[in-house]
Image (cartoon, rainbow, N blue to C red; front, side, top):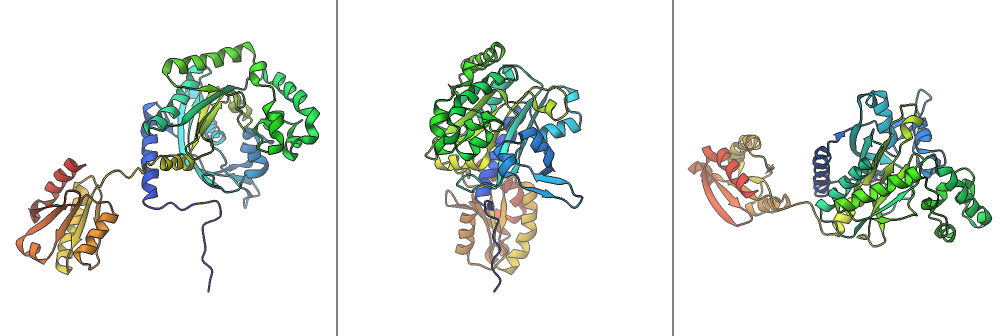
Amino acid sequence: MASTIAAPRGTADLMPPATARWQELEARIHRLARRYGYGEIRTPVFEATELFVRGVGETTDIVEKEMYTFVDRGGRSMTLRPEWTAPVVRAAMQHGLFSQGPQRLYYIGPIFRYERPQKGRYRQSHQFGIECAGFGGPEADVEVIALAWELMQSYGMAGVALHLNSIGDEACRPRYREALLAHFRPHRSELSEDSQRRLERNPLRLLDSKAPEDRPFLDSAPSFADVLCDACRAHFARVCGYLDAMGIPYAVDPRIVRGLDYYTRTVFEFVSDALGAQSTVCAGGRYDNLVKSLGGPDVPSVGFALGLERFLMILEAMGFTGEGGRDGIQAIALGADARATLVPLVARLRGAVRSPVFADYEDRKLLAHLKLADRNHARYALILGSDELAAGEIILRDLERRRDERWPLGSVEERAASVVEEGR
């Protein structure tokens, strides 16, 4: 007997009713992003490997350990998209968007990383993100943060906190690099293997380490605030000032760094304790040098990425289902003659009402049909049997109020549209 083929490890199938929650979240994201003036961008799920090596950084975990890379039939090295920002920048450069002025772009879609699967973390996961390009001032940082904050507030998310830091720029980061080297070098032999390897190449990566043997040295490491230049210090102070003025609470966290090489100045995370241990819901920051490093113009930019799986897990922990109340009509035919009349009626109803119209074409007893209506979460049932057919009528049953009405068959579409609209 052939073994059953299962989904690859670290991936998940999405089916009703879970897909309804995804659709509700995605619809809310589309509305919110458009309201902030952002347009959607879609890029291929695979790109030239060089894009991520140059854009994300050779010494990052993503490039070193997590990418799904393959050689295509033309001998080119390709990689399944492990993050969105570099592909968005590549697309904007290729199609000349930056020559048209500042760009506000957003995306929703999958990313692929080979890592140990765990709750809320998959090898294929999905992200919503914002890229605001062409603005170098703190106003853009705050706009991006405010958009993420509004999405979370729209769900009434409690226990979500915004953490901020500044990681400087090319003027002050060399001083921080030297400060980190001076701090970690005396303890090289006590560090994790990954941290020992990265120490000289990119000591900033050590601050991302989750290895327990690194923790004592991370806790006592110098902070960026000690070495920020005047320009970066002023930029960060204005970000905090705007957040204060807008009433968005935050905490300055000197231990926040981003795990990708392209970040500068403002970095931030939204964290939640809804799943027990504190976990990151959304992360982002400013990346003023990425476009130039990929061969494009000098375009300051800021953005964030939000993991949809983790976000929905938090909503579920809060008791949010996204399913709402009952909606739609279950069309029920009792017998072959009734079914012959009901099938074209269902087609007309689907053009007349804005709610779902469900139909089952098997011979079942009325109780079985009504159980299907409950499973579909339908608000109404239209019931047509031989008696109703002979009388030229149909029964509308309100499944929430448990009340019946008899309608002439010729008026069903008009009446159904009115009743469904009132009951929504």
